[in-house]
Length: 256
Image 1: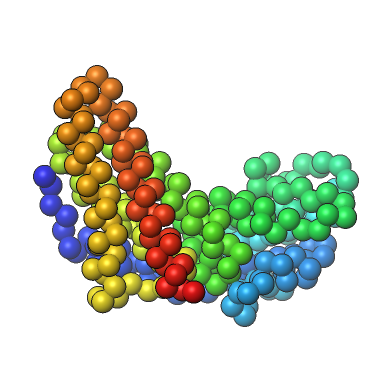
Image 2: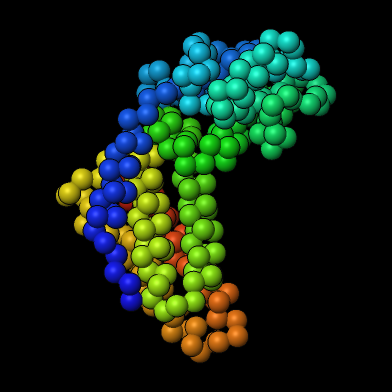
């Protein structure tokens, strides 16, 4: 079995600490931006959401459009595109209009008179930002669950693919474990928690739960040689998801 070098884990811990140094706000602009700003900022840290400021200094942009995009909308979206800032568009009013510089999957439709669907907007933001949403989640409770959902699913899929693709016995251990450690650290960061020397053993204990599942997978691989690769990948996926859900509950209780 390949060894897992401690320096690799410490590298991930340092990376997680750096994540929480990103204090860029979520920028909300456009029609009724102040109303949506209040919904997204509820219970969050001061300054985590803003309806003023430069898009170049934002973590992401939520642009609210009142019907068909205006020239101001196009300019704002073009500026975000040039700055490579992730964008989610919220369409209000009746009808469907193409939104320039924004993928259809990143457009949230808000029916007239229904109010802003804050939870749906948060889910789309989490999917659009991926791991880069972690600093915002640490400061915005409305984003925390969607971001944790996205992190757990993303890392579980990644490990599922790796588990099925790596055939040499034991060669998958460092790769899958490092991914699980990184997932747990990202979940800690999403709750605004830093992992130090005191908490690192708890982290490794959480990840160790997934190791037992990988041992089972290797045993079953010999018993089911034809479909063993699929079984191994499925257990890697399930093991990573189990680790992620356990870590999320732990950090939620710690943060609360």
